[in-house]
Length: 91
Image (cartoon, rainbow, N blue to C red):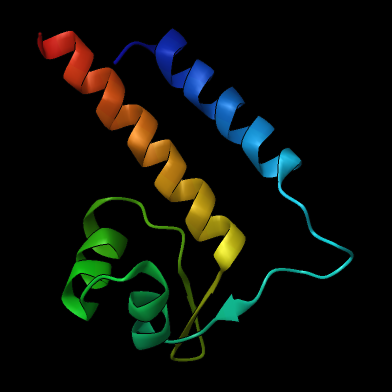
């Protein structure tokens, strides 16, 4: 992936984040691997792998993770864009 493509993905992600409705309320904060796994519909081991290897946006504070559902949705959208770009380059 070139730097220009990466920049385009980041800009698109920024647009998506700005377009998400907040309704005056912050998005829910998930604090455990289990809560994150349930929200993402993935296993706890998958979430741990995403955190350690794929840049999942969970931050550990006082033995608990902190990540908002909005951050998760944005990260998953960015991952989908990266995978789509990679798949089209391989053809």
